[in-house]
Length: 175
Image (tube, rainbow, N blue to C red; front, side, top):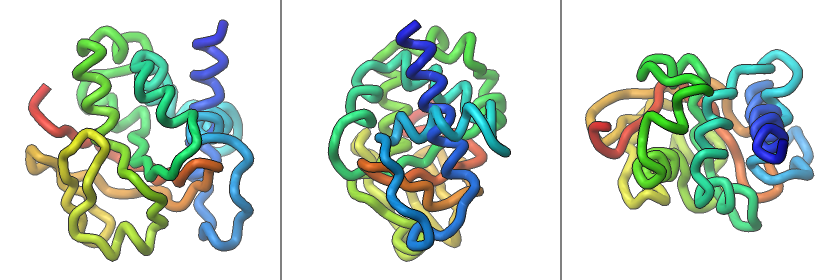
């Protein structure tokens, strides 16, 4: 029950962010990144768009704890369609990789500090919590393998950071 609640909450949080109005025009969301993702995923135009991400975060206790606590983070949140490109869905994402590998992949989607869209686009390199670097050019992220991911929704606020949705899972190494 607790996992399902967290998954639903994380999904809603991400969906809320995809409705992308400029961050300055919206008040800071009352919940954590996890709370906002669940809220966004549970209703509105992006309902169900982040089920796989939420399942992955729930399957990685370290990432779940970090994104639920105070701090300042920028999350590049892959959609379900992004995970599907890797053959992943909510029912298999938690078992497709070891917890250590899943944590590394998810941490590669999180940068320390709160970076709105202007900050992201103004940076050519973004250091991630995983320790790797994402290259960025014109709203397109390039991972360690040379794969690209386009930022499709920007500036979804949370009490402990900001969320940007992306169309491809970025990887720090070949899975």
